[in-house]
Length: 171
Image (cartoon, rainbow, N blue to C red):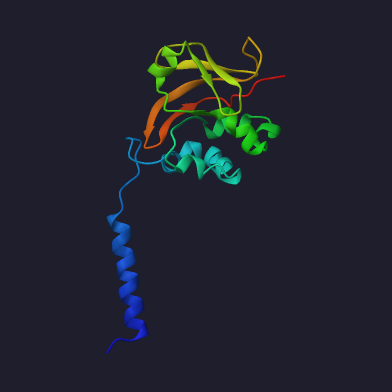
């Protein structure tokens, strides 16, 4: 005889087995940006900010983006106005397209972000470039800079570069 208790037990067992069958998320190009960010414990504050700003759906979809993700240390050191700036401020850290370090070098170290600002390579090394923001319409970098400390985390819908600073231009 099938009872509610046996149905619950069977359903619970199925859920446990389904959980065991899941793949581990890795930065190998098979998983979307938001999932890969979730595997990086030192990017949890940035991921939370993306979710609060309702950008997680954008970064989980099929369109390719390049994300310059600041570490938790970098994010907490940024001014509150930047951390609390919502989607507009976070778009300073997202570019359209899939840009690895070689692609960035091929663009003479210039990347146009979704917010309209530009990020430029201003020094560092080929494997750990130093980057800085340029205000829209300006010719010279200004504001915070950081280094790409873990480049080319591959995602199904783009690339993540882990950075040591929150990039925003000064007025």
